[in-house]
Length: 448
Image (cartoon, rainbow, N blue to C red; front, side, top):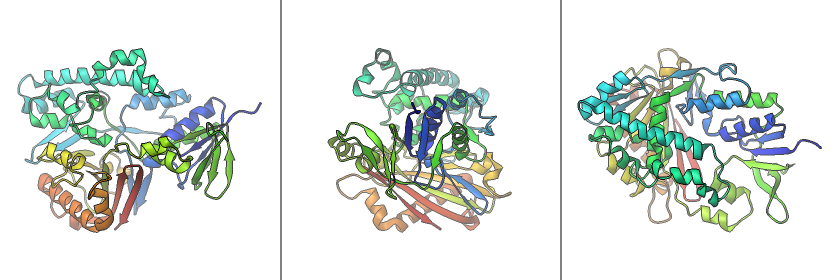
């Protein structure tokens, strides 16, 4: 009997890793991807010698990446991947001119924390790390490495026993406030919820696991960009027989007559690909409402809450900006109000908190010598069904909104870092927005 044929739709991180693992187990695997390259949200773009990651800009939980390559009988090093450790992890910029350098170096963290928490502040940090480490280990054991094919899977005894230790019913801000008394330290140890598209005042405390892995294992960057990691996994897959079909968008998933089984996919060209198993590595709402036949479940997904959206600036500068580190967080003076504006008021805050990544600071290949590649990510609201919304504003007044955000960012950067005339040294700009509607993600892009 021939090996079962698996069709994977989407060559993002999940699709590439799944395809390679299945090929190692003897399956015949075909991956179809609508774009001209693999990567999905981990893809890159280049312009005149500058390189930008369009998705993740920091590698967390490095042990899981090493485990993946070990499972494939190789190593990251053998596949040509070089990881550079970011030090400090972040430079956090406050509105009053103060900065906080978050580091895996305990002696540095001790002096930084004591400036805000007083003598003995490091003990509060250790207590916080004990709890966040528990969140990390329990989540990895009972959530990240487990399948949940049905609702009843949530009732597994080990997970239920660990539930209260994970603090899923408290916000991360409320838990952090039990350990730190200063507003600045509460902000420093909660801003990571922005990664998840959530407010720290609403995100479950379980997600303090992010700060644990950042501080216990470090933040890393793959030389050449994040797509290099996926390209390496895809190369291993090709050695094992995986076929990649790029520029092959899928129009629909083929299903059996009774509607219970996927039997393949139809490409936009009309070509039909039959398979014994179909794996879809695409947005859940999109897949159910666009690729699969209509269903009550698909319609119900459109009504579920979504995370926040974002506007990103990709800037090429004609000079170095030495005060910026690889990863920078600029926090609003009205921290809670800035998140409430996004998640409750569904509007852009007057003073947003935002993230600045400088890949050329850790990887010189990201920009020509003496120049700087800078990525700025600003969280904005998602679309809702009632009243004027952020995405409607963007649709109607895109240029006005981008100009407003752009000026806010430049003003904040110059005011807090002391770097002047940044606009004069800007060689090229690309602006992209990922705006989420309830039920349908869409993207807007403008190039300058």
